[in-house]
Amino acid sequence: ALFPEAGAGEEDATDGAATRGARASAPHGTDGGGGGRPRWGSTAEFILAAIGSAVGLGNLLRFPYMVYKHGGCAFLVPYALAVVFLGVPILAMELALGQVAQSGCVDALAAMHARAWGIGAAATAGAFLLASYYCVVLAWAWCFLAATWQPMMPWSDGRAAAFFVDDVLARWDDDDGTSGRPDDRDGTDGAVAAFERRGLGPMNWWLVLGLTLTWAMCFLCVKRGAESAGKAVWITVPLPYLALFVLFFKGIFAPGAGAGVTAYLGTIESNTLGKGEAWIDAVAQIFFGLSVCCGAMPAYASNCPRDERCGANAVRVAVANSLTSLLSGFVVFAFLGHLAMTRGVDVADVADGGWSLAFVVYPSAFASFGVPGGQIFATLFWVAILTLGVDSAFALTEAVVCAVCDRSSFCAANRGFAAFCVCFCCWCLGLTMCTRGGYYVVDIVDVYVSRYTLTIAGLAECVFVGWVYGAERLRDETAVVSGHAFMGKGAYFPVTIKYVVPAALATMLSYQIAVEAREAYGGYPRWATNSFGWGLCVVTPLSLACVGAARPLDVGRKFCHVGGAGARSAGSYSYSLGVSDEGIGGWTTRVTDGIRTLERGEVEMGPIGI
Image (cartoon, rainbow, N blue to C red; front, side, top):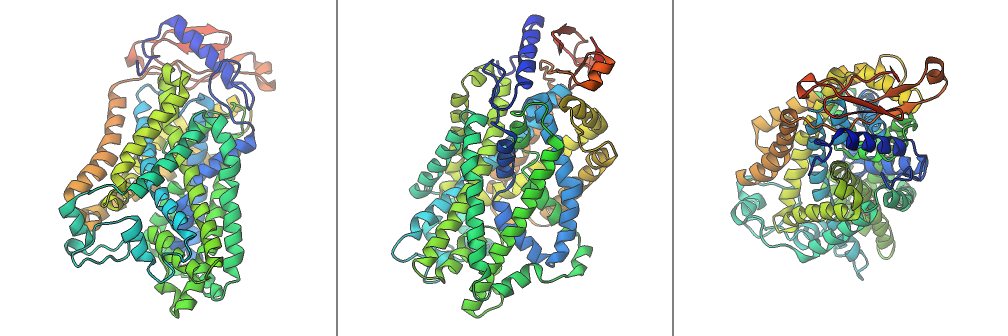
């Protein structure tokens, strides 16, 4: 059965919970001797993996342009506030859920309330969609990397945009047979009109090859969970930083770099602080940049022992993510300044964000260094793109695999098969984005997942934890279970989770709905936005959340026997996650070896003398 524990008898539930409790207390690199959850080799390994999940293409391609767009240093004010009052609390909450419950987000939320599992399922669906299109973008990067070492780079004659649109994407041409920049939309008269008339079209074999290569790498990283991912992150996380530092020192000393850096952080336009768009973009940057509310962080944290300092780990990951974004901005704008100088234009004429920055502007900048210098630096850039992307892709994949293995004992016992099935399903969805109209599918899924799927899932998760379960309760219980202080004893964590984060996400969601109401996104045909946007990215995850509310999921309670000075002075105590839901069928409790479990219903969590 998909939910094998829902109908488990008393003895089965008790034995299963006792086994899970033993595994939960196992040290790094072990599974408690029961062949259960794979473990990270060390705290450093987990931190590397979490940083790899959080740091992705958005740090390199989106953040620098947001700083430039919103007044340089002035944008760092709302961004810093978003990190402190949104990013760190929600990241700490997700790490605590996974670590204390020793489960992915679906089971962790179900352990808190039997009707909350649908929120985790909706977030996991978002991870599935993100991974599917993310790997297609990496397939584009494989094509550029392969073309870099031709005798003459294909974009060295100033046709970077044409190479990306015509050769890599093979996108439908517009009515006059020419192609512009990849994000140009000329309404009903341009390339979008061709997409509307011709649909997805045939697949491009070179993109399918790049997609297959990317998913093969992801499979190798997730097939044994933390054991395989832990080995991979020692390569995939340091490597992009090495490439970025080399590019930084090359770019910062290139002619014209000063103008680019000045455009990036050398200006302070304080009037942008009065514009709501800057605050919305700051919230969006940190919310999506930390890979929260998509199931990745709880899945990673579930492979840690319960005594990890999850609050301190959240701060470390958030700081590393922000510093990477700042470093990326210097790299990006140093090269933009050099490109502007070689063309004899202002930085504003070459500054761009999104896919155009990576696949049009940057190749043009590298071409200005000639051969072989341009090829060397281009190779470093594509390696950085690929490793940053693969880290995030296999973290998203792990979120889905973790949820499946938590729910199915067969998948847990055959994790490699489960990982292969998840990767194969994502690969199949990605094939629609390797077609001649696939760029538009990538664009639609990217926008709708970020605007709606993850925002709604994050809002629901914070409201549930903050108001239904209790943010204070989660804070206090995490501190007792881990044996370490969690986010302090003051009001910071409860207030941010209950008020600040929901208000910020609700405001962002309202703004996005208002923008969509004024004008349909991108002028795309209705069949495309309805199927790939609203249907796939909004209706499907919301349906999972509704099913979760209607169909309670009864999981074996995961209690942790707590020792230490505090416990010794007050006796022996057990802790769990769970709130009462008497409507499910009453309370049935068994106690064995300090592990408290339920056959049906849920129990208030807190110290219970046994």
